[in-house]
Amino acid sequence: MAQQIRQENWDVVVIGGGAAGVAAAIAAARNGARTILVDAGPMIGGEMTSGIPIDGCLSTAGEWVVGGVIRDIFAECERLGGYIGPINDYRSLHVVAVDPEIMKIAVINLVQQAGVAMRL
Image (cartoon, rainbow, N blue to C red; front, side, top):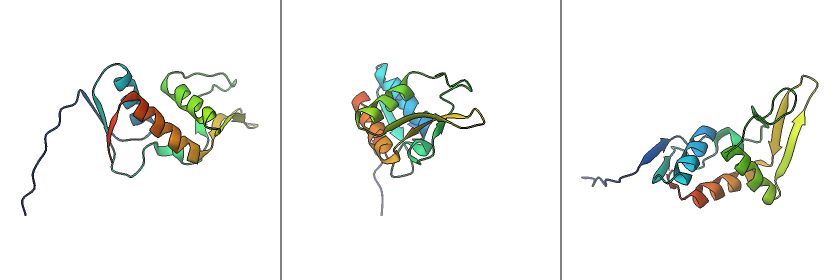
């Protein structure tokens, strides 16, 4: 059986809906690019939605070293009641904890608010 191929035109095509892909797609769309996010799985967000605390946002002194999209995602988690916040242990490991189910909603909300199309 023959298949019909549909052509689409986008300014930015982001392949992979993990943390970096989500941030890239949101940033591109916010800057005016017609953006589509493509992922093989049924849900975007990658490790951010796993329930594992998010590393790399805070220095060993507990100071924020990131801004932009990830901070907006955390703000959306907080608005939805799923932001736990920075935590640390005896090794000076500082991570950010969130409710993973709320993170799923927050990621989708920000992608949709930015006007990013998705193909999952």
